[in-house]
Each structure stands twice: as structure tokens, then as C-alpha cells.
Length: 279
Ligand code: GLU
Image 1 (cartoon, helix red, strand yellow):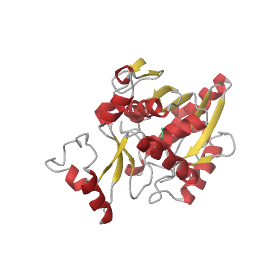
Image 2 (tube, rainbow, N blue to C red):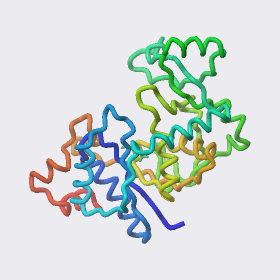
Image 3 (cartoon, rainbow, N blue to C red):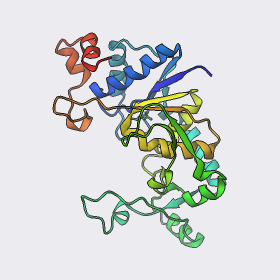
């Protein structure tokens, strides 16, 4: 299969330097390998995604000099495929309904403490039926216990890391999906969760190399398990360093990092940006 990598932004805001660095790193890798570069709009969260952000993303990437294959895959157009995958996992007894509210999950946790990975089990059938009849909201969670029982080589799951994780992990890395607990695959409000859509789409788009920021390294552990359960190929991973601003902090939407459009309006050229990033 020819080298294929991707950039998969969520249209929940304007792109900033950190996104530009990630997109350019992937694009240049595809060019160096004589491979493909595909784009994917990760807009499954309808409450936060906006068409105007998507349009701006395409414009900003073109401004940076990137070119990508058509058509662009838009996740919101494929929700039925994600649901079918969850249904298939459900038929194999790998997912269960979890009715716990965020508040219930947080009981006993101080605000500064990280959320404890949740591990649970299906409710007794009669209790579940009763809650469903009351219209209570639930999430579909992947059962680690069931996954472990279903997969012979659960403990041997691994992926190849060509970049590095936050602790310098590189080369063949053992996948540790259990550190995330029973992950949510679908919620009432957002019909499908990020991890499931990503692994299905990476496979569908023929992605051989996932190149993205090291902030998503932990996701690879979970995604490796999903690939095994769904019988999908495992791409090679390359988690790159995060671009830091002059204050030593990473660029982030929530910090109102200067957007590419603001830089453009201020007269910054793509050449300036590439030079600044050392690309
Ligand atoms: N959509 C994700 C984000 O914008 C990226 C997902 C990925 O690269 O796997 O953070």
C-alpha cells in the first residue's frame, strides 16, 4: 500500500500555528515518500462544529500551500457507518450501556484530581429495561473485560512509533488500552465518539501513517485495541513534538492562540511561518 497520511482537524475553531505545524509535517512526509495526503473533517460533535470553521480550515490550508485528495471525508456524513460498527461490537457482547452521569462518575474526586478510568459491566436486564423505559440517557462503553476475553493476544497488542511519546516511547510500543478504562464509544448527545470514528476512517482512507501531535499519543493505545477488535490494519504512528509559543506554552484554541487568519491579515506569509517552524 502506498504511503498515505492525513490531517484530521475538528472544525471547532480557527486553525493556529500548532495546527499548521501538524498539517505541514504530515504533508511534507507524504511528499518525501511520494505518497498520498488526505484530509478529514472530524465534525461528529455537532454542538461544537461549525461550517464556517470548516470553510476557514480549507482556505487556511490552501494558503499554507497544502494540496489534498478529493473528496474530503466529512465524518458527519458517515454516522450510520459508525453506528453499524458499534452495533457489530454490541452483537459480540463487547459494549454495554452505562447510565452513569458525569456527576456520579466524579463522586469523591477533588477538582484537581484526574478522572479515574471507569470500569463497569452491563446492568441486570430488568434494571436496564426499566431505565430505558424511563428514557434515561446512556453511553455505550467498550468493556475491557470482554475485549480481553475476545482477543487472544490482548497483552501483546503493540504499535510502531516512529516519532516519540511524552515519555520518549519509540519503536515498538506495547499498547496499554486499560489505562483509559472502559472508553465511551457513543453518547446520547454525540452519537459516536472520536476513537471509533478515527480508526474506521483511517482504515477506510487507507492511512498507513498517522502523523499527529504528541498530545494524542495516549489515543494510539486505545485505537490499537479498537483496530484489533474490528479487524482493521494498524497504521504506523508518528507523534510529533508540539510547537511552543514564545511563552514556552503550546498553542491552543482555548488560550486564544493567534489564528492563521489573523497572522495572514497581519501580513505574515506562509514562507515566514515555515521558517519560524524550522520546516
Ligand atoms: N480531530 C482531532 C483533533 O483535531 C485529531 C485526530 C487525530 O489526528 O487522530 O485534535
